[in-house]
Length: 276
Ligand SMILES: Nc1ncnc2c1ncn2[C@@H]1O[C@H](COP(=O)(O)OP(=O)(O)O)[C@@H](O)[C@H]1O
Ligand SMILES: [Mg+2]
Image 1 (spheres, helix red, strand yellow):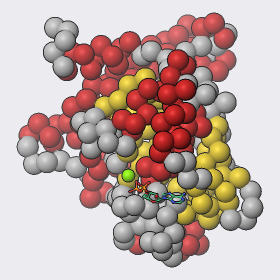
Image 2 (cartoon, helix red, strand yellow):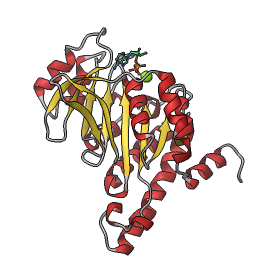
Image 3 (cartoon, protein in one colour):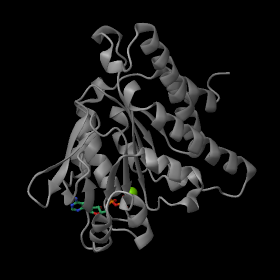
């Protein structure tokens, strides 16, 4: 459960993203290095499992929109992202109360009937959330996204909330909040990067050798990345390429398993002016 086979380690083993072992992940890489492909693979792997998938893709949903049949919600611009993330924080606070009332420390200790569905939030391109466009509104939204994502990461795993965040750059040029968020994302996957600093920021606090190996990934090696394991180790790996049509077909096939998240639907409807 909540585990995805995402690729093959070059040492021969399987590259697995197990969210129960490592709750939150950071996926770094330059343009066309394989980030979206990896997210697609992850969605395909999680699609048959009892989990709510929430997409945040502020490039108009071009990448994650393909899988909308299996997504419980999709934010396609930053305003929507703020609404979705804020609704999730409220949801998590409710879960916290439920756990407290039952005298347990995590949703996994709740009886089956009471246990809420785990939620995986997938962010394609973190910079779209954090970079201010210079307007006062844009700056406020960026700050809200930063605060809300950090809050979700902190409330996190015990409440069944998982973050998988992809980005070209993950440094403090995106704002002060990104460093704090990075610290919360324990799982790291670093594809070929545009600048050595990004590999350093993705893997540096974990292992210096891993940084050098990530920096040496060439532009031709699409889908190749340095991945951290649950035990603090790391390895070069290649993600399994799931062709887009196959990923779309899989998420369609499992669309009946898509849990409803009414609080998020309501928040998005309010934005669209459907609800006053
Ligand atoms: N694991 C992989 N194996 C083979 N080709 C890959 C793999 N991952 C990505 N690619 C190729 O690289 C291209 C760019 O990947 P993409 O995931 O869109 O990069 P990014 O989102 O980082 O810009 C894809 O269209 C695909 O053809
Ligand atoms: Mg992409």
